[in-house]
Length: 328
Image (cartoon, rainbow, N blue to C red):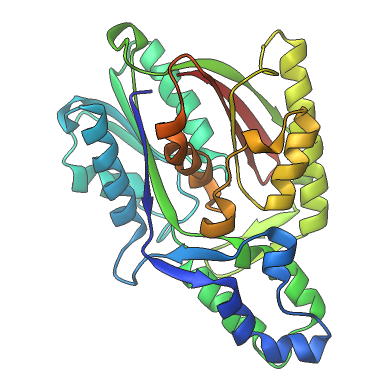
């Protein structure tokens, strides 16, 4: 790994603002304001301006990552966009990013989507192609934008026919956030200054595929069931990794997918590490979907010391998990 960067969406939207718009619904249904902060620990999130597309945001992150890595766009042989958010079914967001960054016509480019696990899957795919000698440099990009989804959700929930069950089913939508991240990967033998991605472990719990169903206009989630199943699968993945010989228990950093503060506390407990070793971005950026892990990692870069062991703990609806190790 030669660089990892985060790009913040500029417009701050607080949970108190959502509560104010939903106050009549709360009163009518017997629900109380403040649930977003109390249950998820999310006080605010970001939105992109209306004229900034998912492709624009991903390209901004990609350009920043290439500059920090010192890699010319002409050298990139693989571009993978891993965003959950997309404008339409086709074309892939990757082609727009490819065009904006002026990448070579020989640069393979495509989208990988796997809910909030897409970026970790992108690292796996890019690493395989680099190790196989097919490409020298890979650029991973991710841009999530929840302005449209959250705007429609709040408007829908403010309706006179909204029930308490509607609020519960769409609660998780209000915890999401907007932001972008990108990473440049290259061959370790050519870059002693880089941070070595050594490998990892993945597990699937696909029997839980119906617990979170989303589109760009509506997302419904069985939050309690998803929480319990996700923590159980994460614990299984962790213990399987230790039994397979991975020495992760004493790692220095645990950069995890960010759905809520409660979730991060539970994750720390199930893997047996202090929660202080899990840096948090969710309180002020919300759940950044597939961008959460690289975005959070990028925020910690100034604090990570050479030789430290960094764990990436990815999990996505479906359910799927991927845990990966980086030696800084």
